[in-house]
Length: 508
Image 1 (cartoon, rainbow, N blue to C red):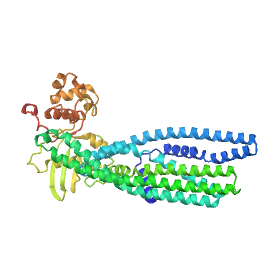
Image 2: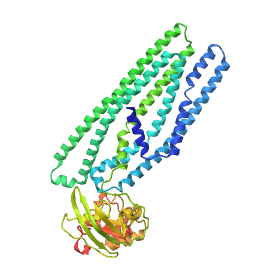
Image 3: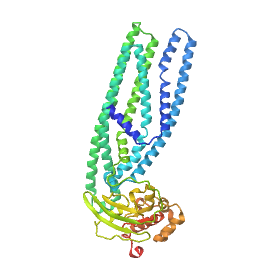
Image 4: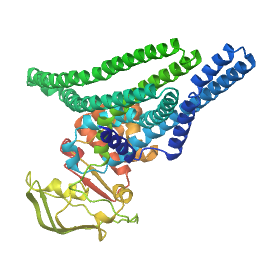
C-alpha cells in the first residue's frame, strides 16, 4: 500500500514538470508554518499554570510567545501560498508544453493506440490537477513531523496514552491507504469509459450529417448507454471505498478520543495530574487528530492523482515502434534531393515496400502514380518519419533522414493532405501559425487562387473558420492548406492528392 503511494510520487517527479527552486521554497515554507504552531498547546498550558499560581507576568510572557508564533505561522503560510501559486503556473505550462512537444513527434501508431479524447482530457484536466501533488506531499510531511513530536510529548506526559495514540494513528493511516488503493483501481476504469463517451460524442458531432442520413441514432445511443452503465458501475464501486475512508476512520478516531479524555479525567480526580496537564494532553491530542485528518485529506488527493499521473506518464513515455529518435544534424541548407536506396518496410507483418529505389532531384516536380493500396501514401509517411523502414535508407541531400534534428527536418519537409486540418481561428490566424507577414500570406493565397474569394468575404482575412473549416468548401480548405504550406518555406513539399476536391481549371 505504502509502496504504491511512493511509486506514484516518484512517477510524478519523473515527469520533469517541476522547478527545483520553487519546490524547495514550497517545502521550507510549509514546514516552518506547521512547526511554529506545534508549541501552542504547551504555551497554553503554561499560561493556565501561571494564572493558577497568580503569576500574571509569566502568563503575559507566554501570551506574547503565543502571539509571535501565530504571526510567524500566518506570514509563512502566506509565503507558502505564493510559492504554491507560482509552482502551479510553472508546472501546468511545463507539462502541457512537454505533452504538445511529445505528441507532435509520435508515429502514426500513437494515434491508433491512444484516442484524441484521452490526449485532450489528459493535457487539460489531468495536468490541471497533478500540479497540486508537491504541495499536498510537503504539507503531509510537515504534519507527520508534527504528529511524531506531539506523540513524543504525550508519551513523556503519560506513556500509555502516548503509545495508544501512536497505534491509533498508524492503524488509521494504514486503513486509509488500503481503501484508497481500491478507490483508485475503480477510478481508472471510470476514466477509461469517460474517454470512450467523450470520443464517441466527438465523433457524433463530426459525423452528424451521416448519422441523420443513415438513421444511426438508436445504434449510437446503445453504445452510449453501454459505456454509461460501465462508468456508473465503476463510479459506485469507487464511492464505496471512498465512504469507508471518510466514515469508518472518523468513527474510529472519535471513539478513541472520547475514551482517552475519560481516562485522563479519572487521573485528575485522583490527583495524579493538574488541570494544566489536561489542557496540554487535550491540546496535543486535538492537534494530532487535526494533523491526521489533514494527512488523510492529502493522501486522498494525492492518491486520487494516480490515474491522472499514469495518463500523463503514458503520453510522455509512449514507446514508439515505427520511428527512431531525431539526430543532431542542424545544418539547415537543404536543397531538396530525395533518394530511396534499397528500402524495405513492413506494416502489421505485411511487406509494403520491397527493395524500393528512386531519386528525386531538387527543383523538380515528381508524381507518384499507382492503384489504391499500392503504397503511394506509405512513401510519404516514410518521408515524414511516421513509419520506420525495415531495411535500406532514405536520404535527403545525401544524409539519412534520421540524422537530421527535429527543427531542421520539420521546417524543410511539409505535406498537404486530401483532408487538411484547419484550426478554429480566423483565416489570418491560421496563416499566422506559419508566417505572420501579411504580405507573404496574401502572395501565397494569390498563387493558389483563393485570395480574391477571401477578399470578397465581409471580414476578408479576419473571417472566422469553424473547426475543420466547415464554412469553407472542401476545395477551398485545400487551397488554404496549400497557401499555408507555401508559407512554410519548406524545400520539400508533399502533395497527397490535393486536387481531389478541386475543379479542373483550379487544378491546372
